[in-house]
Image (cartoon, rainbow, N blue to C red; front, side, top):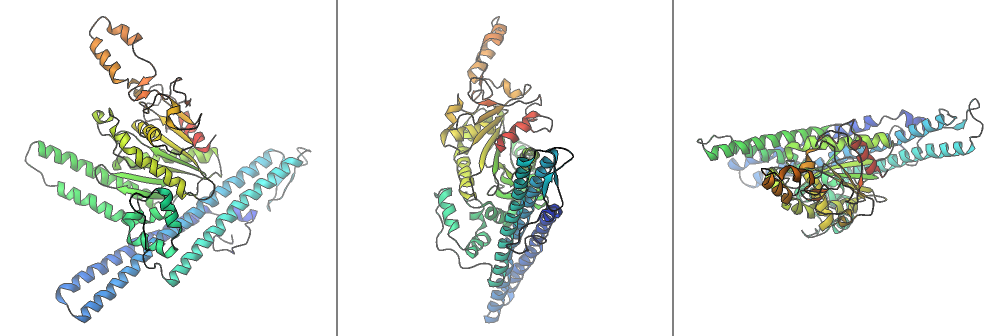
Length: 539
């Protein structure tokens, strides 16, 4: 790693070299490459406008040749766009893995020094004669830990150098080739999609990302990097769709129900625009962890799937499903919750690679009348199942530990998906749950002991009693039996959608939460945040 991934492919990473390395510089370099996409896209759009200007007043062979030449120039520019995003991905991932290696190195050195050992500038370990005498096993352990950290950095260096070399070769030979002869059909599962992608050449993959981003951006089973490239290419179009909807709603109507409806829809579109702009700001940020845009749809209330860190490379992956009223407008805030779990994972496990995904790819209820039913949760089940299968199919190296977390109504989404389709997860986590659609953890198709739940003492979700119990309470509230029923009636472990997953009879495992209400599980001083992070890491 002589200065970074451009170093000699077989050169080992040295101890002092890793200490001096600046992971943030590589992430910043990647962001600089990505920033070139905007002027390239503007230039391509200008060429499109030029072609449009030529057509009305110029015809004949010369006009046809000029238009073809301008079109070729535009295609050449647009073919570069995925590569600019790919360079950013490579450098950001290299920076993240370098940071993980440095964190592990720091932890190993601190452990060695606390155990009475000395580590010099070259990474050599020896006993400190002024402190202890029997340190033979400790020396061996410390040397192995330091060597592992250097190996991590060296592996990251070689992989990044190889990917950059392939991009350099592509720049000389041409970014894309002819399109692939076959594409998987709509019913293809994530495993089949993954095998198809693995059989394509790099040039064919770039052709698909650049020419069919709408197809590639939503295919479960494809690498996160490919989906991110495709969806970022579509980001401007997605914003334009919202702007068109906003423009159509700007004209006032005569007072009445239609005008009231127009105002509501206009407010929703403007909120979605703010949410999209917030997501775009996070996607443009150069800091770690890098964000991967795995899905975006502005239709309706809007949907988004965003990963923090590359889930294909992480050893631990969290999928977070938010609850009622979640839409594109809420996506930046919901992504912040996923980020806080990831930050706590980094604090608890220095050097362990983890990623967190916000999965907002379902029609979350907007009103209590909608949230009282299971339809929207059950409708979301196949998509969540397919997404989790896609994470498994696209993952590189040993299987990652997969955790799926649902909050509030999102816990019902997770529970229904696990019950009806299976999620292939290593752990399920429910926080602030109104019930998960089953009466016992065993009904979720999960290994024993890997269903977790937490409900804050002051969470109003505890009042979400079963409908029949609420009806009885309402019926008896004005009678002398009302107070007695309030004390004796009803089953304390039943909520609106079944047994309370935090109740002792559910068969899951509980972790504590401080009194932080229904949305405070991610507050920094809430032990529930530690609990979620420890489950993600498998602790």
